[in-house]
Length: 195
Ligand SMILES: [Zn+2]
Image 1: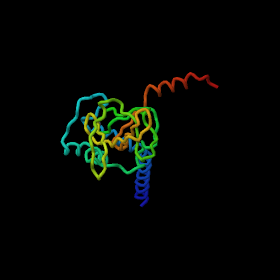
Image 2: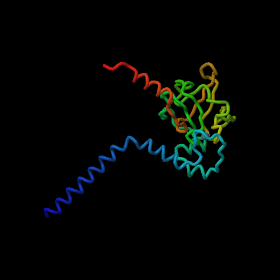
Image 3: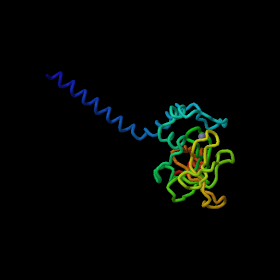
Image 4: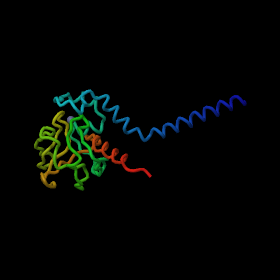
């Protein structure tokens, strides 16, 4: 009986430890999910600008469900649900489907419309435009210039200098912090006299 009790205690402790390590890992689940999503994605690249054209069933295999439904089925994420909606760190926004650079954080603005909004794409070729007359509205759809994934729409009620508002689904955006700015900031901090 005594031995059995010891074993039971060991098992309970092991179970408790596992639970503990699980809760510690919880905070990193999102980034892990992101990285593994990219690992399974053979077309993802921040440097390769060659066009990507895959069949729908191939995209379905590669992309996580939430990205697939917006990017390939032209869905719309619920307003005010994107982590990028009120996010203003300095850096570059990429297409979450193929890694193509789309927007700079300098052109992001608070539009209040519920989706990440920009007034200008990073370059003329980074975005493709198409008329969209769905739902009885006349809108201009914007797609990724490299993989033709649906990103959102562009409207002409944006701020200067362009007067445009690129209303983009946050789920199809990837963000990379500006490394140079960060480095400079850290150097400055290091230069400060100590004490
Ligand atoms: Zn893309």
